[in-house]
Image (cartoon, rainbow, N blue to C red; front, side, top):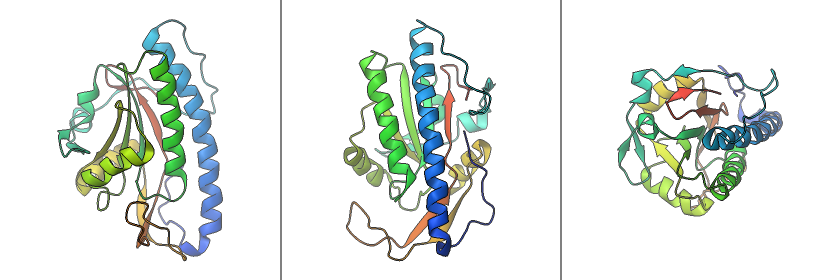
Length: 219
């Protein structure tokens, strides 16, 4: 599910409005997360078929990722090269994020972490992979992602990925994520890792999507 990308994002002067918009997005993400629990557990276990989502909730798909997107070079938190194709054989729950987000991203991560715990409790951790890919490659280096794993207390089947600015732009354009560097609000947010004030923000579309074990985009 996506919100409409903004071609001319509001300035920092519109921060209260932007915060309300992002909270609305978060509410929608929570609803989608609940649906994903049903889909993930239902498909991975084949025990019961999940109920069809309402027509207003996301978009049901059955499209194979193009080869250039599936094999687009990415980098994990250890600095190892990877790509989305490497997760084939597993159900993938994927979202965009950045480790220094001050609003929705950490809440979304926490929600997905709870979903992951439910999946793990159901004995399906080896069949499902949760993946967050940054929209802020300048700051989200492998070391930063590795520190964020401990900070957010993420399990082993939760991947944090980055890549070159060009490769991420290609990926997010295909998925429908719009993002843009913005001036930091006043007072600025604080970097949880260094304790220093942040110097910029990135406004971005919040997207949650779901790939089946054959690598098809399904939601």
